[in-house]
Length: 158
Length: 158
DNA sequence: GGTTAGGTACTCGGATAGTGGATGTCCGAGTCGCGTCGG
DNA sequence: CCGACGCGACTCGGACATCCACTATCCGAGTACCTAACC
Image (cartoon, rainbow over all chains, first blue to last red; front, side, top):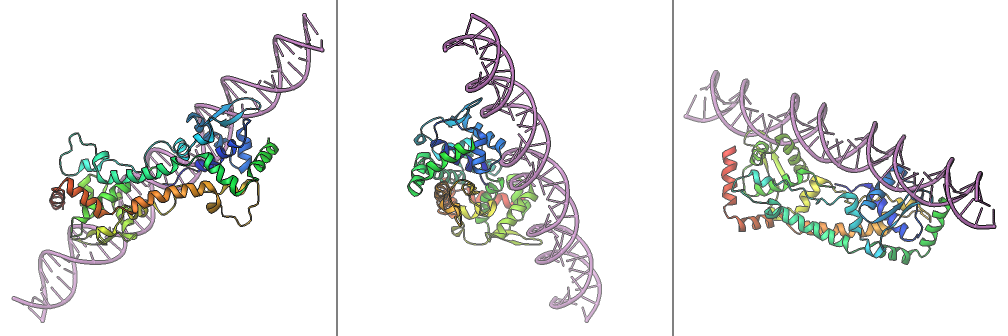
């Protein structure tokens, strides 16, 4: 039940894009962290479909943040890459056990399903409460040179 | 990033076993919910290795809870089946970016890794705070006949 | 009748196939920029 | 000198392979029970 690698890539890509105004192509971002370019491109496409990034084709094209970093939560990115399904898979096996089952939705009535959903909501709440801007502020506090370093390296790789 | 089916099976198996004193073989538990017997057996073996169940071979053998249901949290079961790894996979891609990296563990210092870990801890805290006994109490409150029904059906399937 | 040895059936446990999603790669469609040609 | 047109290169986007973990199954090892023979 581990997350896709793409989540880490997407998080760092969004942070770096928040420091840059011009579009950045996949190849540059991939070189930045030595990632497989074509596969990273696939993940960025997913973020575009989710409305987190915008893309531009052709020369001087690439990806940019679609909205202010304050408006992009970590949950947005995780859900975009991993999909909206819940962590806990409830196949309602109770409906095969003894008792009456007519019209009962065990995703709602099963005590295990409820407990798992409550725990998952706590997780989602934490992720929804942290934005890319929050993380950026943390990084800039500990490493004030990070934005300039990133911009310089990106320019170098163009 | 969905959980294995085995988690749901393991949860319900532990609850049912908490209502029964004698060992229950895999085949009986599998028939109870119409699950594939051999695969369920594999999951129960995992719970034995985790110290949640005990097993007995031979006639009149099967699985029992290894401890009181108060001492088995939902987290115990999830970790037993899914493994102890964290949900978020931090491959420390920051170590490929600009800046100094000598002796830096980005699983600790990366702001994203910290945020993801905090969220995951909230999830784990919820799961650790709910025991099989808690769920059993919920079920018995809503369905007082459940324990007797379960015992009867299990006896019928033996 | 009690005891013991043997056989049998039952159950767990790990070794062994099959399948779906994550991972990784490649090529076509579209777009922008630059160079060139004409006015 | 200015503008328009066309060519070329660059980038995204989706279609196509590959790999690993989850899913599922089967058979061997061990154990308890039952039976029957013997003392």
